[in-house]
Amino acid sequence: MSALIQQGVPLSAHTTLGLGGAAQYFAQVDTREALLEALQWAQQQRVQVTVLGGGSNVVVSDQGVAGLVVKLRTRGVTLAEGGVLRSEAGEDWDGLVQHCVAQNLAGIECLSGIPGSVGAAPVQNIGAYGQELADCVRSVEVLDLSTLTTAQVARADCQFDYRNSRWKRAPGREIVLGVELALQVNGAPSVRYPELQRALASSPLSLPGVRRAVLDLRRGKSMVLDPSDENGRSVGSFFLNPIVSVELADIVLKRAGTAGLIRDPSELPRYPQADGAIKLSAAWLIERSGTHKGERLGAVGVSSRHSLALVHHGGGKTADLVALADTVRARVRAVFGIELVPEPVWLGFDRS
Ligand code: NAP
Figure 1: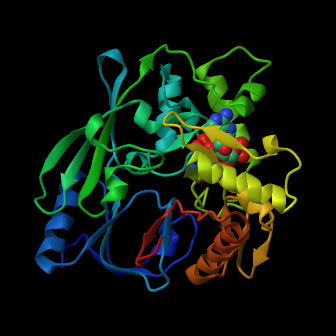
Figure 2 (figure 1 turned 90 degrees about the vertical axis):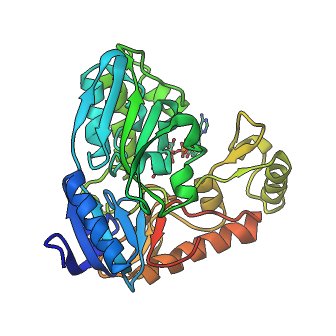
């Protein structure tokens, strides 16, 4: 076995949920050379490869993960002319945002405080407060897992969509090695959401100010990684906000009215999308269908600060979390007829 590869490594220590079984084989790689060596070993052994970044958006099965789990820790950030920034996949995402804000580079300031690695950011097309990664991606460098060759994927080929990308649509084919972002040198901060506008109302607009305000807002909802936070062990938002047709949104509105959950149609949050679809608030649907903040189910529960986050309080199993997620989904389905889709990636089992 390669010197790099360990056997039976518990993945709970490598995920923010602190749940799940062990990786059959595990390698932490700090360089592209080490990554290639580990992948060649996996090819020789004919075992499947799973890539782990910060472990902040994954749910690991209690049975663990078969094959090789590679924890990607490659580092390096370079800034070229005109605000073009390149970062290796293993960099910490929030560290990169902090660096850009300090360099007066605008474009990702609202994405402050999102846990995880740079490599995971395009997979998920991370977004917050009206900004999403796809807005500033120029290209993504990838490694093809079957040929072990690298390629540069242009933005147009990334298949970006709401919290979605070509890597989320077809997992297991390519590893993200790095991203190239087009940022605005001395650009104006982006402040689109009213909640953020209100938080910034009394101070002059600046990139550091926006970053501070976003971090404060997120902290208030236990949405920054903080080991001392009782809601700290989570994957952030557990469900995607549903994007539905106008007809379906109207059905939800009708059901909410019939169930006596609203007195006025304006009480149902509806965010029209550019293509005419309607984004609904998953948190609103969850709370109105009978799930409440702080609810517990043994060792897991709903965050006391945000109904969209499911939390592990310690000593639990992934199966407990799955049972809680199923309960939350079933309530939303029963009241509104909406099927909530989980946001995290499931490792070691096949489910959606
Ligand atoms: P919120 O104010 O409770 O609103 C619920 C949802 O409504 C948000 O998720 C947001 O969708 C949408 N929304 C709110 N105002 C909007 C507007 N003016 N235009 C369009 N859509 C709007 O939101 P929250 O849960 O506290 O989150 C605030 C922001 O931080 C959101 O952008 C959210 O995505 C982001 N966030 C993400 C995570 C994560 O784990 N992925 C965790 C915490 C916060 P969008 O999510 O599409 O923006």
